[in-house]
Length: 192
Image 1: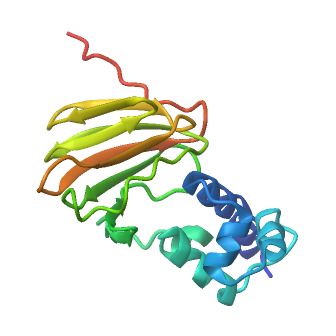
Image 2 (image 1 turned 30 degrees about the vertical axis):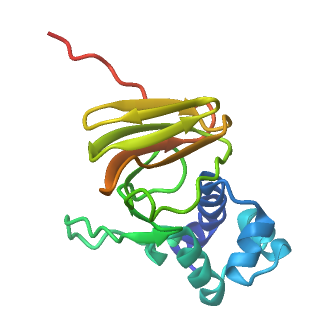
């Protein structure tokens, strides 16, 4: 194996760990989703096991990312971004960033109210910011139950129980930035 291939494989573990943590999934949950053991997943994330294609394919599918993202494949020179929507739990999620770890950007489309999954507040490590692009969003954060319309934004610690969905009979579209705990979206007012 040449140095380049070794460097590529050495970076897979940290990318896998960052993707799993960004989703708020445990090793046991990811193991159930992929058919790999939690021990195998831990060894892959820690770089103690060299990944095989048979292991990377279900991991890419579970994380909703192209296989190229897991191995940091070299760019082909094509500047176009090929967005691949992922449908999960009734939502359509379009990843807008192409790197593992750090702040991630997504476009999320929530189905109309009534067609959404049952409201089930969740908590996980991280910090989230979202901006309503279209429709209206019902945002439950702890004891607060809010309605946000086009052009409104919210920022919150994801360790607080939360739920987001469409507020009415239309789909709702949001732009979401999600980061590990402590990484907040820093928005500066325009300098005039």
